[in-house]
Length: 252
Image 1: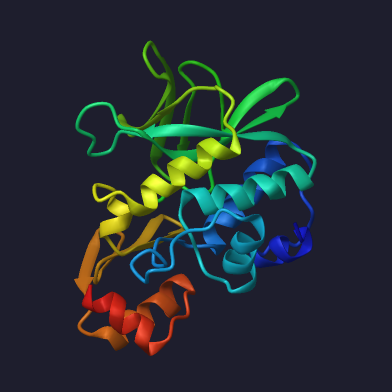
Image 2: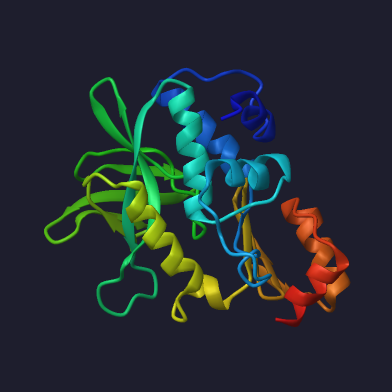
């Protein structure tokens, strides 16, 4: 990958080293620079996991993506920076009825013999890097994330006591990611094939757009027309779309 272009995209002035502090710095910068969004799906373009396509979209075109795009790009950058890292798959428990499928990806990073999870692409919240220790808790900006061993699902990550996702340390292969990404992008029951979503991490939480409803810091408003929708994507998320694309998305 073009590491310099990626670091410029996330606003990193220096090349972080393969340390805990470096991991946290790269993830924090990534989450605040590149939005989470699924807009290519309702626009009929699908989601490619080709590394060149991801870089062209998220770095060069300054668009966003969802977890399979974000964490593929993030993982490639970590490896280029000298981290020992590989992908994992997770089950998202938010609003789940029964045991959910593995529809989320994150990274497992080894630093000085210790495992850490790193996630630059979870749209529901900003998950900080966390060491894999049973009972580990991290509080950032008043939000508490906790990791627990789970007898059935390996590890369970909770946010303020609510289950977010579970995962195991089982090795994940490109074919596993391809199948999971295809399901998320095309299944009739997937929220990403039926909704129009964008969010980005800011100090104090998330700015999010679901359909035409814009939310931030506990307040929400409905955008009145396609022009307002297009302006919100540009101003709040840095996503530049044409008038035709915005009109199609706004119409739903």
